[in-house]
Picture 1 (spheres, rainbow, N blue to C red):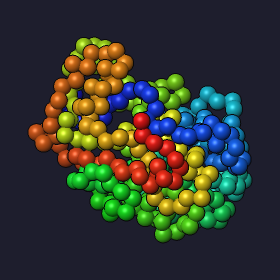
Picture 2: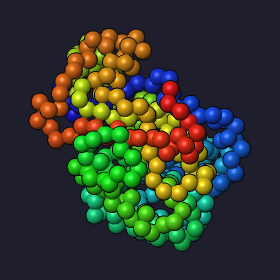
Picture 3: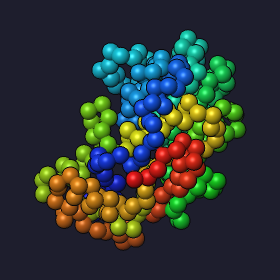
Picture 4: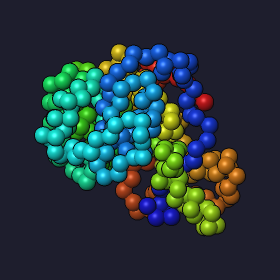
Length: 300
């Protein structure tokens, strides 16, 4: 999005979540055989890094193999159904964490639905538990503070695809978790998230950055999300759950993180999506009361 648009930018600061007894719990959880779809991606890599120490882990990639000698990596295209079925049958994971993008058809809901149907058939065949990463983009953003039972009503092709995938999983599987999250920020595999990288680049050049003061999201640190994904994977919970941070405007959050990291926050200027002419979801903040009760974390 352009400099006077509403690109969400964030920076790695103190973790949003405090997870009680986190390291002990992660260590003492039952050892599982896990396949992480999209293990080379920003979130997928962090999840793999989080769980491999105490589990038997495989990670998939499409184009970019990671420099890891610790866990095996499998090149796979989700559209190659024969190869995908062969991989699942050979590995026979007890848990599959689906953090892969539906690239290059993220915004093609019919294609996303087709791929998800085929995947759920294979998951059922081997009796695995599926953890699916969804998004706040399933909501149109008209009210904010969305709960799990609120009806999806996406305005983007990406959100439509996520909604279709959720529908397929709910209708075809019994042992699943659909994790809806918001904008993910932080550092994974030595790289900052794309939004943060763009923000820092402009600030370092002393360029003004415009952020919407009337658009709200619930950003979450990638480290926290990865740990919570694994906590949920090893739990008895089944269904949809929201995992995200506190509600903040894009402008407010950008200023806050720049201040905390010694940058010139005055370069961040407020703007309004109402004056931008863009079609946006103004407030897709997520209510996380259910997650706080299920896995015992609290917002800082």
